[in-house]
Image (tube, rainbow, N blue to C red):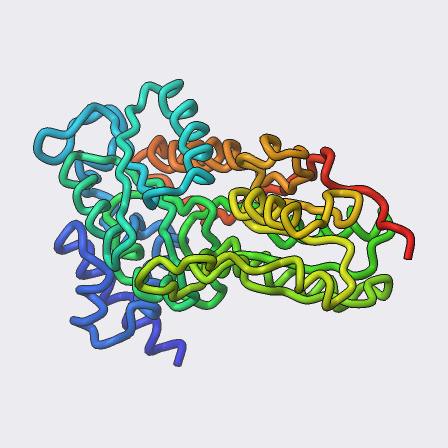
Length: 373
């Protein structure tokens, strides 16, 4: 087994030296092995200092990296000096705070940021990445929409074969998948769920409801972590999780549905709940208004913790919220990308980084001790 791997790596090395640069996917097809196997071979050869590993390519030590992959050079047709492409989905105010953080770091380094907004259609991020590369982007910061749990698999091939360094923002691929080997910077949303529950339990709440979206990696992580923590804490007598609205499901209705927001008051009354965690902010503000119309006062009758903290402070009352470090996500991702771009020629590849930043709890006027039974 070891001899077969050694022989295969010798063939990989010979091919890279002969051609100067080869795409991992193409060479895997030539050698009739999986892309994952060949990627491991390239990583081992790079560790031994025999080849240079790029995103989706392997290069000989004597070949120069492409012009578009060097900061401060003009790549592609009509590209800009030292540009970096940043890809985010449309209508996503949460990620726009990360954009602000990334822009500050890139501009301080003299690198122009070109923003590309992907529509909510399959393949949109891939098309934006292709456009950014054609315009000479030296690297990419990417926050794919990934509305469903299976969506990351549809992006594996093109993300792993990018010819320039790329960093995923606020996205954490599942272990054991090809995307697991991409640089990523993400909030620890499981810790955010812990903060919300710990705050409410500390105030004396024992029956808690989660009304959350289910159409993003953040939402799915939050829902899973809430269920895990709530089920493990002996102080919590009852908990349940519901979808905040039909529009926030992985597969939303094709046409807008009037009154699609969950009717939260009956859910709270059914479970005798005195507290709710609401994801995300805009849904939280609407649900608080809905509770008020149903005769439930916040926080006198029910305490509310919002998740995201984009507009939670603007509520009436201002909502206690879990605040992921959104702007810092962009800053750290940009710094990581710059470190890749500025790595000396011929240097051994740096280890892949998977960075997690902890959210914080912002206590405001929507949480209090539960009413006396």
